[in-house]
Image (cartoon, rainbow, N blue to C red):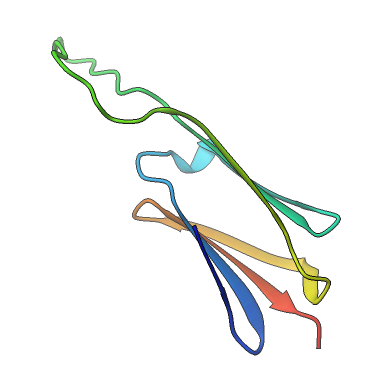
Length: 92
């Protein structure tokens, strides 16, 4: 996970490859940003037999205490190509 800051906002990027957008939760409460996701094991439905699986699956959870300079009403989250990006504006 990366946390970056510009003059106007904070940006948090988290690698969540293989997660479905419906399995990702972004919560902000009392200046604590919580990211939760769950990656399900692959279930081939075409009769394929899996001989070995070394990919990670399970639950992921991170919590960050944000500075008071964050506008808690301006959280924007997007998920593209396995990367969750959360942008939060600063108070001006």
